[in-house]
Image (cartoon, rainbow, N blue to C red; front, side):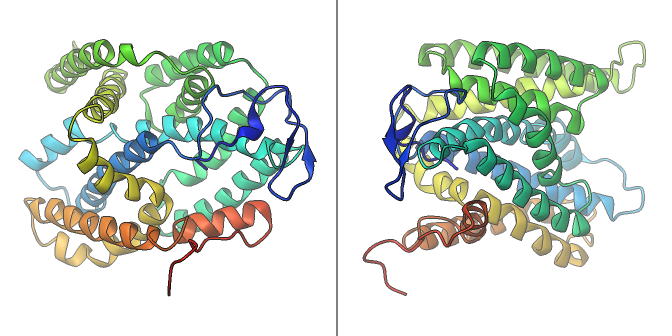
Amino acid sequence: MTEVTEAVKAGRDTRGAAGALCTPDPGVVRLSVVTRRLPDLDVLRGFAVCGIMVVNTWQLTRGRLDGPERNAVDLWVENLLQGRFYPIFSFLFGLSFVLFLNSAAGRTGAPRVVLLRRLAVLTMIGALHWRVNSGEVLLPYAISGALVLLPASFLSPPAMAALGIVLTGYAVHLGGGVVLIPGLFLLGAAVMGRPPSGRLLLPVFLFSAVLGAALTALWMISSGNYSLYYRGTYPAAGLATATAYCTGVLLLLRTRARGALTAVLAPLGRTALTSYLVSTPIILMSLPLLTADPTRVTGLVFALAVLVVQVLFSRAWLARFRYGPLEWVWRSLTWMERVPNRRIGSHP
C-alpha cells in the first residue's frame, strides 16, 4: 500500500514484478519521489491508530452505560481526541490510494482494475467488521474509494484538491461524520500527487493549532448557548486540530525525537489494519471491566496498555515479515496470488 517503484516514472515503459513489459497508465497520477516506503507516513498512520484506539474504547464504554453524567475524561476526549483522528486516517487513505495506484501501474497495464479489486476486498472486510461494530469506517472507506477516488484518479492534482475542498466544506456544513470521508480522500490524493513544500509545515502547524483551539473553545461555549451554536463548529474544530496534530508530528520527525517516534509508531502504522480490526474484539470482551468504572479512567489506561502490546507485537512481527497479518491477506487477495511475506534470513 505504501510502496512506490521506479516503474511509475512518467512516460517510460518498465518491467513489472514478473518481468513482463508494462506501460504505465497515462491517466495515473505521477510521483516525483521514488522510494519503497515513506516512513513518515507510517509514523502518522501509527499516530492515528493510537488516537482511534483511545476514542473507540471510550465510545464503546460510554455507549454501554445508562445515561452517564459527563466528567473530566469525557470532556478531554470529546474536545481533544474525538473527531480528530479519523480525518487523519481518511486523508492518509487518499494519499495511499495514489501510492498504490502508481505501484500497480508498474506491475500491470490496468492498475485501476487492481485497485477496484483491492477496494472490493476491503468492502468484505468492512462488512464483516460492521457486524460486530456498526458504524466502523472500513466499509464507508471502501464505498467512498470506489465511488469517489477511483473516478477522480483521472483528474489532475489541482482539480482533485479543488473538488476535495468543496466536498469537505459541504460536509462540515452538514455537521461532519462519515460525509467528511470523500473530501478528505481527495485532499490526500491531491497532496500525494503534488506534495507541498516542507517549509509550510511550521506556518500550517501554528495556524491550525490556533484555529483548532479557538473553534474548540467556541464549541464548548456554544454547547450551553444556542445563540452561538452551529453544527459545523465541531467538525471544523476537529479538522483544524487534526491538521495541527499531523504537522506537529512531522515537525517532531525533524528533531532528535525522530528515532523514538519512528521506533514506536512506524511499526504500528505498517500494521494499521491488523491493529484496528483486532482492537474491536479486545474492547468488546473487556467491556464488563471497563463499564465498572464510571470515571472512564480505566478505559484510558486499558487503551494505552493494548497499544503497548500492539507496538511490541508489530515490531516483533515485522522483524520477520514484510507485511502485517491482515495486510498480507489484503494484498494477496488484491493480486489474487500468494504474495511473499517472510523476510530473507528470518526464522520461524
